Length: 114
Image 1: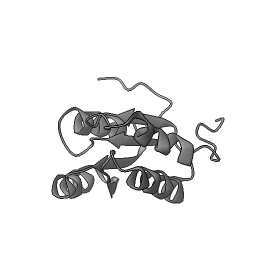
Image 2: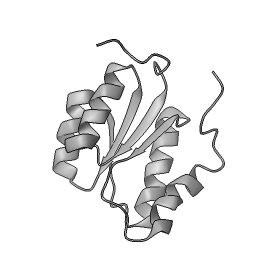
Image 3: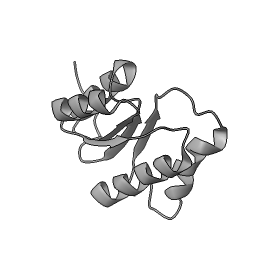
């Protein structure tokens, strides 16, 4: 299958990235050459998935604002920017919890010009 193009060297964050649809998306993004940060509440599955696709693994419960903020911080520390966010995890209990991720990135250059 031909690639989409334009993803090489860019950074993606995939929540729910340890299994199912999230892992399938992460695999595809890796095949497209993206840097990956995968997050999941299941630490054991997360470690296995990260090892398989060579991704940064960040254990996260998206219902906890502090953990979501830590995901943003770890992503920026490792890669400096975020180009794509795939929120595949089970939805947070409160809308504001996942918004913390975007708030934590607010001072960052989320989508730098190529």
